[in-house]
Every structure is written in structure tokens, then in C-alpha cells.
Image 1 (cartoon, rainbow, N blue to C red):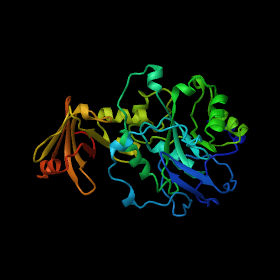
Image 2 (cartoon, helix red, strand yellow):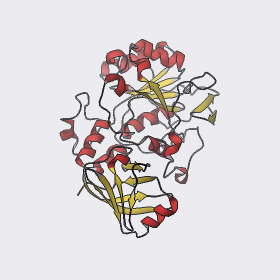
Image 3 (tube, one colour):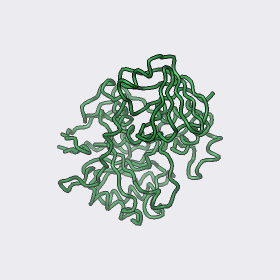
Image 4 (cartoon, one colour):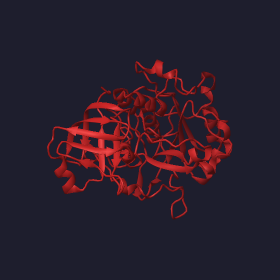
Amino acid sequence: MVGGGVSRISHHFRDCDFHFHFHFTFTYSAFQTFHLSSPPLPLKPRWGGISQTTVPSNYRCFGTPPKSPGEIPLLFDCFSQQEEDREILSDGTSAVAGGIVALGKFDALHIGHRELAIQASRAGPPFLLSFVGMAKVLGWEPRAPIVAKCDRKRILSSWVPYCCNMVPEEFEVEFSSVRHLNPRQFVEKLSKELRVRGVVAGENYRFGYKAAGDALELVKLCEEYGMEAYIIKSVMDKNRFSADMNSVTNSKERGQVSSTRVREALAVGDLKYVSELLGRPHRLILMATDQERFSTGQYKVSAPRSCLLNLAPKEGLYEKCSLLLDQENVVQCSVVIDSKFVHIETDYGGLSDIFCSQNLKFLFIEFGDSCT
């Protein structure tokens, strides 16, 4: 964002070297419902942006009770994700009322998305707001997600140490319901219908019909509607491949971390680069069905590619991977991906016994370094 507009912006993201002077209670349903008892103290606005987030020693915020690393789920029951996110709760209130929503496309849940969640958590209960049904409305070709839907809560739970001990919640809005809204109408929906307290967006964020609104207009409109607006600098990709990849990525990108870069890194099999962009190893999830089953041997498991729930890297051999069978069983393995199957090979001789005794329906694979 150009410097000329900075003086007009009254709220930006806050450093976490201060204490929030409020508390809230919460209940869990499909979403968290928060009740704020008093607003946070006003703070001096500031631009920000970092390439990699660390948790400072004086980082103190109050919110959801902290979770220890052991409480963050290693695996997540994919069957529990059948309930769809709803815009309105049963009592007629918005599920994000009183919260701070991060705006964006959260396909990859990469370190740039994490930074948006961090800034949202510093101002209040954090939500990731995204649109569903966009591909269908716009006629885009369907494509596999980078993160399996059933794995998203695990990833968001891993952000707890960064997000003031709160788990960012996801909130989905049907794209068809906002497609033709101009920038003012979109902000009005956030304020009057969803009743959010504030928004967080990147400096390059565009919104409204035909992307007519930019970050400066978002701030101006939020002020008119009595909401806080926090604009943060993009998390830049400082990887040695960034210059080469930027030449083939979307022209809207200017070197920032993006889902496009993650997809391109997966396409060339560079899992080390993928891990740097995601801030974690890439996890591939496969689900057996009545039609497509896993084939198990003493040292090997094979699954048809049709079992994949998210995007696999390019065909090839991947070493130093991990097969996560359950909370206690993590097996080192190598993975071979070909045009029809995913093959997992280990030195552990009891795979078939585990599969027979537990009737496992899912395979969880975390990748090590690049394709060999």
C-alpha cells in the first residue's frame, strides 16, 4: 500500500507487548460465542509485517484457556466434519458477532494466513472469513484443496500459541450472497448483519463487486460503520526460488507467500519449500471407502489416488516421511506416488496387524524433504 494513505488509517495491527484489559466467557457449539465485558484500551496505530512469526516472551493476551502441545490433536476425526458452518446460529444471532474477522482465501492455511489470524486474535475473538461456492458460481474447474477439510481444525489448533491462546474459528459465507455487493454494501453486511467488531486484511486485499474496493477504502468504510480495521503488510516469500516462481504466478502477486506458490511447489515436488510456506510439514490424507480400499502388507500400504482428500505432490519417491496411524503409532516411511496409486513403504513389520485390528479408514502422511 502506498505511503500517502497511511495518515488516514486510524487502526492497524497491534503488537502483543501490551495487556488486553477485558475478559470474555465462551461456549462451544458450531462456533465459539463470546461476550465481551469491556473494550480494549486504544493503542497507537502502526503498520506491520514480518516474514516469519515468533512468540515473544512478553506475549500476554487473555482468551480461551491455553492448550499445551499435548492437547493439540495429532489426528482429527474426519467424520466429525459433516456439519456445515452456518452464518446464523439457532437463536438468530451471527456466529461471528463481536469477533474480529480475517478476510481472505484460506485454502492453504499458510504462514501469511496465520499472520492474519494472529493480528485478529490481538484485537478480539479471531475468525477466518471466507467464501464458499465461488468456483461453481464463476465456472472455475474444480481442484483438490491443499488442506483436507477434516484437517483444518488440527492446523488452526496448532496456531494457539501464536493467537493469544485462542483457536481461530472458520466462518463461511456463500459467495452467491455477496457476489454483487459493492464495497459499501459488503462492509454494511459485516456490520449490520454479521455484527463483527473489526476486520483484518492484507495490504493488497480487494473486495466488493469486481474487486472495486481496496484496503484504504476498507478502512474508511469500517470507520463509518463503527468497526475497527487492521491492515497488515504481506508476509513475503524470501525463499531462494521466489524470484523464479514469481515469474509464473498470478500477476497480482508481488513476492508474497500465497496458496499459488504452495501449489506450484507441490507440483515440482519441493516439499522443503512447501513446509517453509506452510510453517509445517505438508500432510496428505487418504480415506478408504466401500469402493476403494487400502491394500496392506507386512511392510507396505497402497491406496488408489481416488482416496486422496487433498492435493498430493508430483509423482515420485519421497523419503523421510511419517505415517500417522493413531496417537501412539507414528511410523517412519518412504512414499511413492504414481499415476494411479500412493504406496507407503516402511521397515516396520506390523502394518497389516494394525490395519486388521483397528480397521483403519484413514491414512495420514507427513512429508519430509524433496522428491528424489
